[in-house]
Amino acid sequence: MTASLRYCLDLREPHSHRLTVAITHRPLRPLLRLQLPAWTPGSYLERDYGRHLEGLGASQGGKRLELRRLDRHSWQLAVTPGEELLISYGLIAVEATVRTNWLDGNGGFLTAAAWALQLEGCRWEPHRLELLLPQGWQVATALTADGQGWLAHDYDELIDAPISLGALQSLAFAVGGVPHQWVWQGLPQPAPLDRWQQDLPRLCAAACGLMGVERPAADNYLFMTRFCGEGYGGLEHNDCSALIFSRRELASPAGYRRLLQLVAHEYLHQWNVRRLRPRELSPYSYGGAVIVPTLWFAEGVTSYFDSLVVYRAGLCSEAELLAEWAEQITRYRNTPGRWVQSLRESSEEAWVKLYRRDAHSDNQQVSYYLKGQLVAMLIDLQLRAAGGSLELLLQELWRNFGRGGRGYSSEDLIEAIGRWDPQLAQHCEAWLGSTGELPLDSYLQTVGLLLTAQANDNANTGLQLELVGRELRVRRVERASPAELAGLAPSDELLALDGERLYSAEQLEQGLRPLGEHQLLFCRDGLVHTSVLRPTAPQPRQWQLIADPNAPAAPLLLRSQWLGTPQA
Image (cartoon, helix red, strand yellow):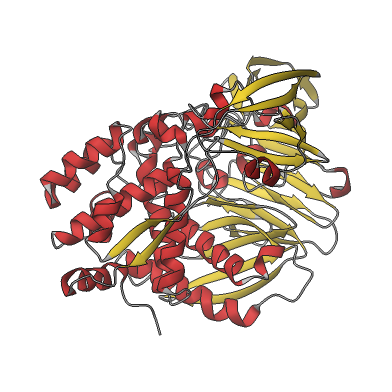
């Protein structure tokens, strides 16, 4: 494979948090458009990567060419066809996420969408990557190495291959005969190598089992993990995944399970969303937002199955699985935005809402990850009652759409569900399009589980508070709550309740009477205000998912089939 484009990245001054890029190419047309992607697949937000680009220039035969800016992330260039063109620019790399670029003296991570200019007309041509590295640095990427650098069959493959850099540690294992590599950095304490060597293959094998296959969709698979002080996240790719996780969490059993769940989620994405892909993402349009009504399926179904895969791999108990699901139900029921935004709207509005959270977000939106996984649970439970399952449906969609790279639509999903259960297709339309309550309690009872609310003795105000230094600040005010009716807003400082100075949230809770009337003194923008707070009766704030001790045999059998048998 001969590459017509060559990208050379100079990373030899990582302490500056900058890199330089040089692109060489022989253009075929007199006008050439250059464009930096507006987003990276898997993260549905226009990130304006161009804000980190500096010093863009181009030349042919030693003569500098004039660049004309077309919009905030694209330029046009008049060139001499057939003559070698050099394009160069710098980038600052200061955002340590799985969707951006970062560099420091110890290592780095590069997301191609954030550094690789696309040359018009060259998308489907081979691309070569070369790296100029600090001494001793290692490289991990899913691209194919050829001794001189790395090769990508086309621009899409280049964009789909992040790069992990620095002093890397790794372990190798195989699943279904497919090589896997787990690469990590940022972990000064000894890594739990024995556990990883045992647990990761089991986790990946359980994911394959869920999809009804013996081996993953990728021919090689790479995990790139950065451990940090605080952080959590992942981004899926065809043949790899990029993960960020807190090294502090890794030390606790609950944190370790959370890491495994993150691994399972991104690993499952090599099927659901990467190859079994919404039609709107086939092919990707890097220039701007693409509305995807089925993100609830791409992310919600994956979120539902990631914890189940951990359980089936034998890496958590049934009690821990049920506690995880109860936590998600609690989050959902404590989100007032579920009464405002439908699941389909949540999917379509991802670009302007989910990734742009603020203190008011929970009042006007619901995550398609969160509600999507609960709808996935309902679909699975109803299908199982009818002799099917969501995993069988997912396997069918994989055969019909994923294997051949055929994008699916919202109508395709509902039609596929309707072939298994016509009534369920009607339910799905309501669950996707309305803001009504989900019938979680009744569906869970069909598998012998009770969703119980824990008692709460505190009067309901709709306030979430935090201490900022010695100031008691409002972090969130729930929609249509007593706090909202009292005129409170995020960032207000609460000063006194009924004439007594406030120092903590616990003090406020202890001083409130349900259905009482309280004088509240607060500060906003340097001015002191008074208001009347009228709390309502205590409301449930947490739910548990427990086995029904009186459940008959049929629901117990269905639950056993639903959860599956963990690996020994």
